[in-house]
Image (cartoon, rainbow over the protein chains, first blue to last red):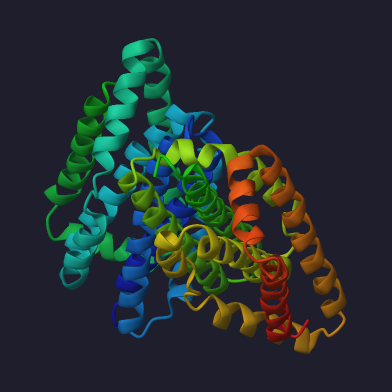
Length: 214
Length: 214
């Protein structure tokens, strides 16, 4: 794995993404959930992220990498994303858990598929949607049914989540040239691939937005 | 279980104690841990609390009780305890995770043994120390070895944790007469029992303080 610092980077950024999602969802659940049942439901998603984090750390250790060292270069950019996208209410927290985390995880899945076929299976496993859809979709749709005007505000919020994510992704690409180079090289083999990557991300994002009724 | 509202109360207060310990430890880990390895270690303890919370909710549901309804009467007192005992630094967070949570959980164990033999086994299982000792003891002892003067400040902090816990326990006893009455009645059968209860709590607390070297 010493020959593949980009691979360690990929697992590192994903591990820190899971750890910080766990922390922020737990916090959002405690601060914003309108009931203890809702708080429990979002905490369940948070703990699922933590279980993914554990798997990624185990894999990093197996590869001879130090999980802390692998995560550290990405902590600032990911923390900045969370600071820029602090939900103001429960619906924003739900949309963030579903749409914001969803697009980030789609990116990691696609990147892993292109960069490191050997870890693609683990990443697929980690990123499998553990029933996130059901709970969030149901809550958001119910809220929009009783307050249709909220849809426009949530659409704006979802765009902000994606915009801030792209801005942090650029920052990471600039700071981690190995990771960026690996992605560029894998894409250079097939010029159409970068378009396909963005097409996939956009398509999956669109599906999530429709599912929410936004 | 309808004949035993004290039993549902006991599971409810314990469930909310686990849920709030999960939330606060996750928050302390993110805000105060000096390294990502430390943050991970405290987050592991937080997630272990969450797993206990899950078991308790399942048991409440089996008993025909609504977990949310069972927890709600205790949320304010337990949240107040956390607000009164917000750690100012990493060592305070560790001592709180070990000493503060420890004494509360000892109390629940002893109460369950006296009140509801049928749930005592579950409570024992939930409260089994999942390696909490090892990590916290090691970190606190190492910190005190390099800064012996911190010991006095941490001893004061531990007393505050216990004092605030007693004050919230009195508040709960006043608000939940069934729970208080069940404890009193079980103790009335054996006048020496209340002394033994406090002796056990004090002894276990003393053991934890010695383990930490405070």
